[in-house]
Image (tube, rainbow, N blue to C red; front, side, top):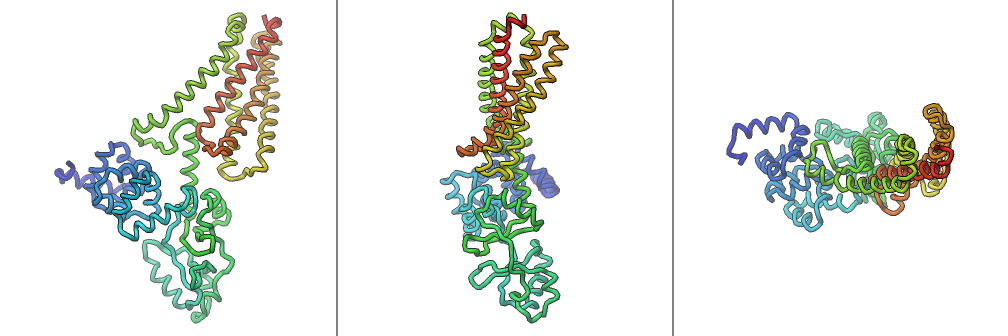
Length: 437
């Protein structure tokens, strides 16, 4: 065990203290049993610091394997938001047992955060903020703020509450310093205060906070009771993390996969979608197989198959990227879906006409057969029109039926454009085969 090697243990401690983020990423490459042994050997405060940087799914696995004493020491030192994020990835039955090992205050804070939906502001809000009652005098408020100047959590905003903990205002520091020291905060505060409901979606909240250029925003319940705050940088980090997860999901990788993830974890996430992609590839191949005779008769057709399929895939990916951004940024309402699908299909048709014309001319000059150029040009129009339609329809349809629109949309899109492209091109070749020979 590591405990028996004190010189090595001291070196490990120094390394973890020097760069806990890099150390956490290295820890993620180890087997869970080895990682737990290292955490047991580290000082609890350092283990808790490491957990801040661990990928939450991996952190959840380590906590499940850790002895109760080690588990208690680590979680008790975590920020409640970090603890809640990790506990969300632990099955309910195990979560209940693990929570019983925690101090009452920590257990209560984590449970309160767990009641909010995963993508809500309430799930990541902090209860570390300064709120003062409206009837407090200015001089007392200034003294309170000064006393917190050198704490670990310096004050950015001071919120004002009434006797029932309702959010009623926010302080402007300039107004506070210039006010009569015996005046109450109620006479100084800004009453028109922006707040976020705890159930507000994080993406929507990030847009609102960024638009107003606030450092943080207060979080309230449906009755305007002040519950906590959420910081702008935390919201932005969450949105960036979700965006990168969506990118990975679009191409069939796990949303929670990292470059430091164990190989077994990566294989488990990727292989199922690779098998699905393999099945769709055989589907496209079966379409080509239907036209085996015409390809054998006019072998030049095989040269142009990748061109039709490739252009369709690229055009569809462009539509998919635009629509996915619109969904992530919440720019697409239910009423706009029909207009959006029509718009992307129209763009696909126009792209198809232009690209098809260019392809027709190139094919004619290359192979000296004008009809061949017309066939591939018409196929390009059909495929790019369908690509635009599919690029818009796939993500909005997946969202409408409750599925993640980012989950391997590109695999579905590629299948459609390959099948349609091959069928359109080879089908037209059959129709015009008398002029192609």
